[in-house]
Length: 499
Image (tube, rainbow, N blue to C red):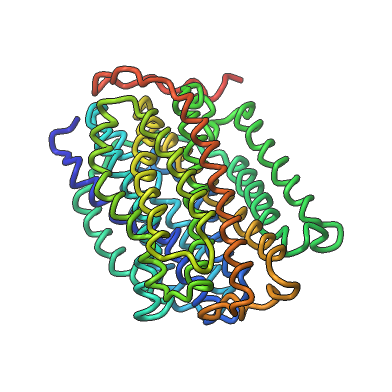
């Protein structure tokens, strides 16, 4: 390793921007009721403020990881940070729900340029025997950011208005730009050709699938327009994604998704596991925030403070877990974390009633803190441990794509389930307008049904967490670390087959 490279200052500089873009994944959840009222819209349109960001974030990750290998992770990160910061200002200035959603799409594109570069830099500047601690910081950032988002959002919405959850990114983005410019090294690049057909297939497939899932309840799972139905969109999305995988396997050029990476058992399983984590963490906050604000009458700040135990425990335990990952089998930590996540969400589902004591609601949140501490670092370290450095960007792009795919599906899936359970639990017509959900507190006659619907919705991420626990159970015990400096052979699929 180059003695002039200072790994930790470089990582801390990258983490600031990474933290900011992950906070924006969840910070909107606490502001949803305020956005709903302020822009005079409905619950489904407000949920698209999050889903549009997640979708624009997820789709380009495969190619932005490769772009980082080709042009350098520092350049891609700084470009993405510029796009993200400017679009954040646009979000805050939006005066309609359509403009806000459009700005969030651009913001997601900026985030997609940044995210793979953080893991790629870790893989390339930290030796394997110190990578666990570095991944511990990366994983803790991912876990804590998703929980700090609602807390920070509550303070900003109450104090200044929902627009400031976006305006805050501007000074943070400028600071992060200066730090990365100063502390992150220019790393060697590797030539790549880019699979444009793969980009189109993956983007179209994901959009059709997510749009179909999220809009299903709106159109009663029937016809949207003319011959186009909800189910035709979902099926078309699955078909297009299947074509994408086949193209990656049999196409003659360099694949966008290097399937050879999945020959590593732990890489494959870690990607499956982080998909379930992305699904669970993204989907759980929406029912909780709506319950706290519309049933219990809490302000955005008060509802966000109900999530503080998770954030505090995640921050305190992150360095401990990071050290353990280098010394023990990460499977055991990740398995415990996934099981605790499922238990905490099920506990919440039981407790969400209009008259549950507030102190009792803090207990499953503390359990979520223990769960998150055991999830992020062990899974990310398992995924990247054996990545060859010349495909670090591609590998981190795949890993972050699967995480964001889980988050997109979680956002869409929880929206569908919430609407379905509200329709089942509330009197007919009670869900027709926005006023019921934007009000400070629901009428007493609707509180029992609304709370029950939110609790039932949380069983979905709980079930997905159990699926993740089963996946983690099959992690192989990590092989001894390779000597640092030995360049591992690139996967064979990286080279185009001979004509």
